[in-house]
Image (tube, rainbow, N blue to C red; front, side, top):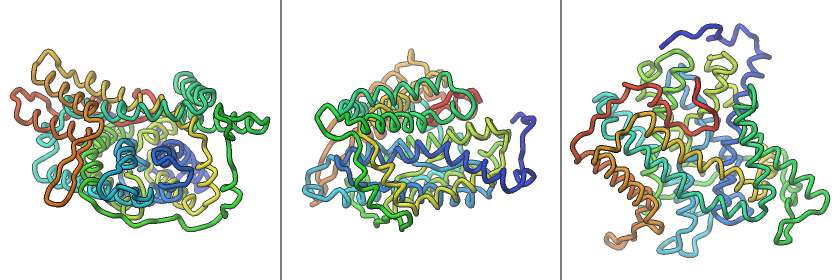
Length: 460
């Protein structure tokens, strides 16, 4: 790694007040994307109630980050926020209406979804053990870009219909949210370029407030904003934790998504290493960072929270500020934990119009798919080779074609494999059995770092 100049490795030299401000900056960087996950998930369940709680999400992000730092020997300046990779799984479970899921409450469906996420977190630990035993390069031969790229593409494209559905409730608000994100992502400077999602949400929400004040309604006649629950919420209260539940179908829906999220983790570790100038894949080791991410994800699922993942947004803040001290990230994590105990803040976030969510999703879901395309391009996947063409083709058709999944019965248990699970299994198997796998992890560090999902250019 090349050593960076004019950076601060120990933020203690700046004093406590400046460290607190730097921690606040990291919290704002992760805030928009982290809270967007429960907002999107709740829209899948078609209710104004918070099925996936914003309070629980923030609490799990903060505590999960602290878990991660403990497992990585307090060396890696990474923040763990809500993972977007599992959104398709949440949407699938929200729409399940057969077997035990028939007439099941949204709360119970979330608990079973969290059961699948818990198992996904355990898969991180399995991969960490394998990497420790055989080395990262051997493991990654089974998960090359020709497999992970198309899977990531499928994640974004499978969510596209929900973006259009939400935006159609008020296209004006959706377009405003979309425009603000584009403007700040393309022409923004400094911190504004790092947090375009948050700015898009805040800007369009302010516009919605103005419209609501002047009596403007949605095209269907409903009010743009409803603050009934905000007024009733208290300022201080425990997050509404709920215990995880397990079912084979839910596990098979959520757990395979870990393949994509683990690749995102590996890419983010590469990006953070390049930014800070330290090889974190070697020290403290990729196996340790995977353990931290996996434990954070499983813990979050145990109490009704979403999966966690390392955040590229905070890597951008590291580059922007020049402060690479992990202590600053831990301060941000403490802020997130505190916010988890403020119900009124959660209800304000929950009052977000679905159309704004749709506008944001236009960029976000498309960006997820574009990340998959970029991963393929930057790793120079050769599609003149029949093996690569076959693998990618089968993954894309499975991921987009099996819209209702594949349901079969084992004993008395009805099991459903989702499109993404089928695509992942097919891709891994084909890559393992077809000859000609010439991918070697680590040969192109910049390309390996292109798997994280964020909203900023990869020019670190």
